[in-house]
Image (cartoon, rainbow, N blue to C red; front, top):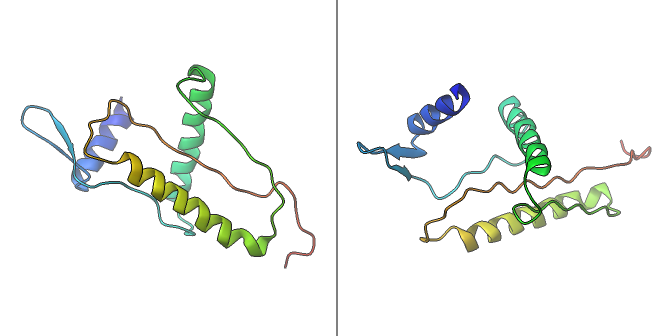
Length: 124
């Protein structure tokens, strides 16, 4: 509970949410995402937390309540920036589609990972 209380306090302090006198929460910003291609221990910690949340959801939620997929593909490192750009576009498109005025009953997190499974001995 202390973790949630700290998160609520932080979101209020940063202006992400406002809590009214009657306890109703209002989101002040349309959405949030981390910076791209930036090494940051706070972001890394958040990614570890997301992986733990995903693991818990995989164990506890039915397939109707979640969607876990993976794709293994050949990819040259020189094409990685384009792949990242395509992932960001998909995330933005998904966000725009479902971030409307309609009140939602749930909050979901989309977490996509793209990483090499092999080691390129020719990489400098």
